[in-house]
Amino acid sequence: MDLLLTLGVIKRLREHGELLAMRVADRPRSAIELGEPVGEFTTHTVDGEPVGRAMMTGTTLVGFFTPTCGPCKERLPKFVEYARTMPGGRDRVLAAVVGDADLAAPMVAELRSVAKVVSQTRNEEPMGAAFEIMAFPTVLMAAPDAEGDVVVTDDSVDLSRPTLPV
Image (cartoon, rainbow, N blue to C red; front, side, top):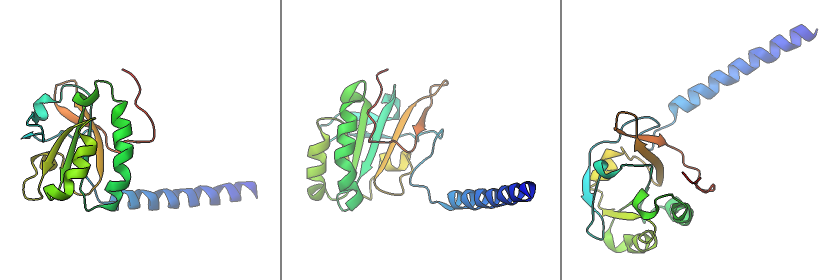
């Protein structure tokens, strides 16, 4: 009887595993994923600083927000607090606010002290294209790999945990 019960449980676990795998496979991507290379981009911050993939020489926290997105407004303070703990400070944090400049101004102001901030419109998103952004908010970690290519090292950054010193 125990053997039959165990076989039944194993069968159900396999079925649930297959269903879970299908559900994960069907999940739409919000951006490039773990291990994928970041595309080439060059743009300027709201302070006039040039930024681009070539300047990402260490682990970099990258966030994408838009002022018309409720979850973006909820996640922004957590992003700012997390960014304060980044080793390397503001030089290792890159944020893009996508949308109308007037609406984006409060988000840009909140991010400026902890990140290099890029303000972009929907029609002009060099950073968004490089990271293949399809949803907001998106928070990633990127760093050069062994060959020097900048790749995504974390595609689901947990903003509730502070970063660890390097």
